[in-house]
Image 1: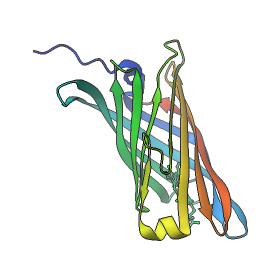
Image 2 (image 1 turned 45 degrees about the vertical axis):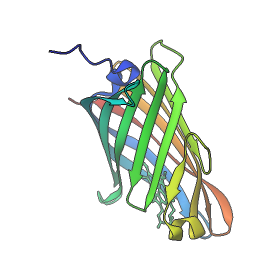
Image 3 (image 1 turned 90 degrees about the vertical axis):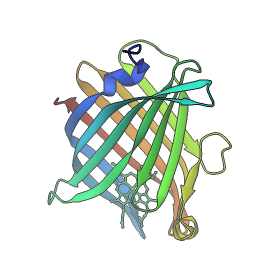
Length: 184
Ligand code: HEM
């Protein structure tokens, strides 16, 4: 057997979380739509990978499923990986959403206390942490920046994320936040 995998700050995310205090603020042609939501968020440890024989990443695969409170319908489905580079002290989140938008967000993990606080961010055309989107989205509903803050302690997870858009001829901060409890 090999050494146990060091998931670092990601260890605290492992499991399935549920929450019903979600709030989505998303763009409309003339303003903002507000959607209260419930959510299931699961993180599965899948081991580690080695890159170029010099970088080791410990990996969680995640899936986020969000339902509108008003009717129970899924209106956001998101998946990807969280990765921990213990030598560099860097956390990364790869994000895929079914609007033909992908993000690779990253950040340094500096504060080793409790609660565990994670911050990852990306910007369009940033050489390190970037955003890829279809031609349609680039031209009509462009994601220009993304930031995600999480705080985890004692079976409770808070997050807030801001997706900065250019849509309907203006800049719009599309925000999502929730508080979840560890179920299993
Ligand atoms: C809990 C998380 C999220 C929820 C509940 C959510 C929900 C929504 C909703 C309801 C809309 C409006 C759709 C419409 O009016 O047709 C929207 C638009 C959009 N979202 Fe999200 N979103 C989430 C996260 C994200 C993330 C992480 C990204 C990208 C990194 C993203 C990118 C977009 C884009 C580009 C649009 C513009 C499309 C449009 O309104 O026509 N969203 N989102």
